[in-house]
Image (cartoon, rainbow, N blue to C red; front, side, top):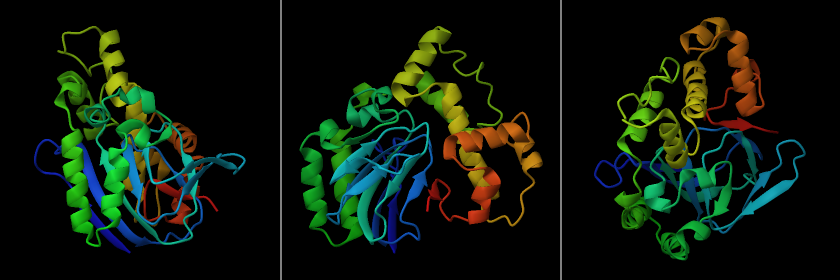
Length: 274
């Protein structure tokens, strides 16, 4: 597998686009996987001519077919993806929480818990981008072309208010200890307006974003550990008790944390589902 990441360091993409990566020859061990919420919006462009499928979590029937390019909004529950029994070739863009409107020119709240065809958001330009990417053998060149396309899309008029950006950063920095009632202090707007703007630009409330990032902390804390003291971890990450941690983990992933840990997955937001 060839994984080539690019983390923008210069404006206008720095801070707004967390990573652009090219993936060639990736073949996961499982035909289906659960993609667990990570608080971000993602653009995926397949470069191998194969559709991907999203399945109903309970029944396993096909819910949606994704072709060419698609935009996944911030998810608040896991989605089951599949058709990964062949090597994948794709390019993906991970957009920072609160930054998506500068590229979609629409509120993030419109995309929560959805996966939509990318052309319905970006028009034919995203399909033209895909055509050009498919002609390039060098992943670095693909990333450069995609970054230029994103730069052309970027419109600062759709940027989130500074107080929303500040609130997001505080949650990401320490989701287990941040005081939600203190987020937005000094913004000179009402609490209701602050939450409405947060939901508009991030897609969810501060509380929901906190829960998602606290889940990510669990993944980070248990990776590469042979044994985990779940009671101690729950206190360390700001859960009220171990039962609270288990409920949150199961609610977002469908797994109990000990079962997840036993599988030993190498990617924290992807759970095997077969």
